[in-house]
Length: 568
Image 1 (cartoon, rainbow, N blue to C red):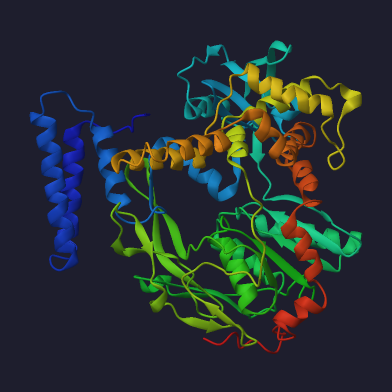
Image 2: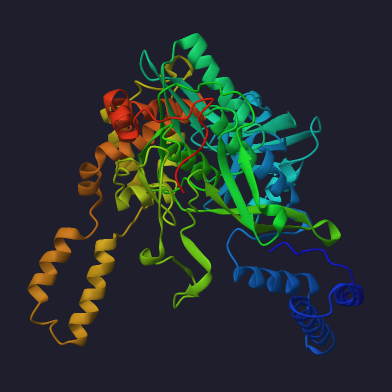
């Protein structure tokens, strides 16, 4: 664990007491009295531990643990950022950092390049996914190297140079690359293109600074150059980001002056209403928005408000349900606090926050969902019912495709990733796969089973876990001998069998390997393009344009002169 830098304890105690006296001078009673009281208690305990504990404690570590424990009692979005993590916070807000444009992650104790971003130094130098980073500027990376340490080495001022030594698996050997860092901005619009002659598609991965501009640029290109008449806007897996960007994106589709979202907090300054400030880019274009259980926060503002205004049809799965707003505040010694300051409400007036962090908690101390009996129903501008406190519920539900336990293990153990690296190493420049039509040959699929056997791959299933629990209960209740034959037969039928299960889930696993191979050559955009042809949610969305879309949301979209908004 990287230690947080703090000054000597005496300085910390003095600062703490000064803060206490300052607060007391401002407001000596009520809530502030409780604050000052407990600050004094914390300061005295901290001082007592430092002076009397038998070992020499590390003040920074103690305070870090205390802060994290305190914030854990609030919500998971209120987060303390020590000075060492300020760059992480900036990246989350802007999508920008100074570095080489590569994602590095430990696999089996080795720092491995997982992905490279097109047009940035790592990609241009020839670094590939699967390369194992051995050293940076002559500093060897041992097995104890972690992601934060390697990130610190690779990131830096734009234009500064570094030497990266990597091992390339499957015959590539050791290589060194001279790379000049650059200002890297991971695009928010991962992919945009036409699905057919009339239907365009835009995938937005996050709401960072400038993401609304990226969506607008993609929207105009598809409409003006490719003849797009309908749009599918994909927010699946998008965990949110900046509130202002979500407002600007909704404004692309609704008239100037339309209320988009409002916020309410403890402080009056957070009681705000956000309206569309500009003329829309596509006010009348038929629109379908895709969401799933990982669509959260800003994604829910966009999808929820477009639903409230009957401006878009929502397709997919119920969203995450995060109706909270955070703001970042500067703290002492160049640290920062991202703190929840308000709740937001979509155009109909509903708050979609699912978990009640201020209410009762379960036996494990986790927040629980608001009771169904306490939830209110609101109405869209056309009178359709929408409910609060449950995320955004789709107008057309499409189940997320099933993922087998075997597939989950192959992904989490990086077996698919490793085999894709092996496949890519066997292809030369003339064999670059087409992102859409590429498929594994029968021989390559057969090699995958051999690859797993040589790697000693093992896995279990949820069925076997439940069966083991059942065996324990049978033994406790003394039915184990009576049920012995039945348990033996059941165990035989469901225990993991690699050859059988590879055949059973062949299509699913092949698709994952193919997508990972495509990623090597066509990067993230190519992988998204490939997946669209067989994506059940996208295919369902395409069928929704026309009479079905009109039948669900009607013709009640707001115009420039009709901006009263949904019924609250």
